[in-house]
Picture 1 (spheres, chains in turn yellow, green):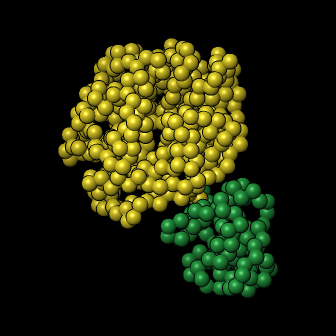
Picture 2 (cartoon, helix red, strand yellow):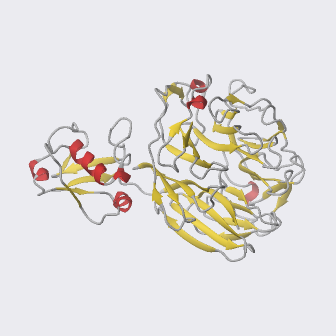
Picture 3 (cartoon, each protein chain N blue to C red):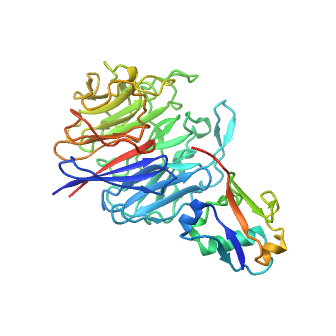
Length: 371
Length: 98
């Protein structure tokens, strides 16, 4: 019988939540790497038992852990992330030049077809690649070295490369997103990059329609229709129908279009999920009600999903990497909160149940559908 | 043998309990001790000293013989009591909550 493994990164360790295809009873293992910040855990599509985890803290820096048995055992692999050449400077919060400094790995994106190849998005923003299962890492410097690089500036959480999408429809095409520089696309497997932010409009930067400088929070893509991208920006939910060449707003009737995660139903490319958050200064749900919003029309028309979610006195946040979908029928949706809950819906969002309620603050959630 | 006391997280990473004992050839300096420690436990590379600069990570301190050696030059000899194994070399993480 098929099953699901939900990989959860938290402020104090990683957790692996497992269930059969019914998704009613869950086994919880962890904490793995207790006491460490686990920004992201993700499995290889080519070998689901191979997992990569980003382990870091302020005292001891960055480690990468790898499992080859679905998270039962782990071994540390390479943790040397050295920028290619002299990385120069980017803008600091006050606009002054600031040296590029490695802080941590935010996101790990395993190759679609090679279990030994994995990409890492890091803070300060850069893209690294390993072709030996994480033992060694080399920067793909074309992104950080883009002409606009010295003008990039951090968002409040740091200048992080948080989203990596490997396009299944176009070999060599990749997308990356950086807070607060924006979205970038490569058509040559990461060697060269260009900004793809036309149509984004952001208050708080000198030129509101600038080529770079937008605080993109997350981008999602459906593999069956890879030219369509959905974006949760700092403010605004956006859509592109041409692989990022242009964007238009699809916030529609959302109660607020600020938020962090966005994801797409595994079988319905027009069904999109977001979690509206009150504002950039109030990082909790409007009115103390935790509501996932679903659009079945590719945006603009949104419905609130509330069954099983707290509808009073709820002031958690849902971070950008903390939502995922499985590919069972019907599609399962998962998200984690800064309050330590991981919610699951086995019916595409119609109803929700907490798998766990009391984990440390959740940083990331990934779902693996197992044979 | 040089005795080294690691903070808890690094003991877990290195799979050691209690103190680590290291043989250090030549002059016993902070650099020599840390080089020997990383050679024995490669998983600790990058966790105590920055890979590129070789500098002590900001939230760590180095103590021995009731002295703070964190800002001493890395190639200065360590106290004789450390070199003789009578006193340990302590790698200490800054105290913090959360």
